[in-house]
Length: 75
Image (tube, rainbow, N blue to C red; front, side):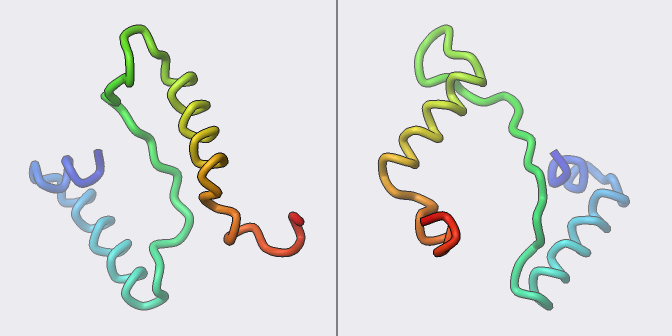
């Protein structure tokens, strides 16, 4: 959404995107940001956003995604 606003001429959005990019180049990451996804496509008719999020989390857990990021404290 921020990117779309910047592309459509919103100078404040473009400025913020450039600041985020500058930080990523300087510190190696863009920091912790909350991302809101809108207009998602369901995997099957009638699937809710909550169902999709739950199913994604389950599939990532089954694949072991994120295990290396937790560290010894979680083991």
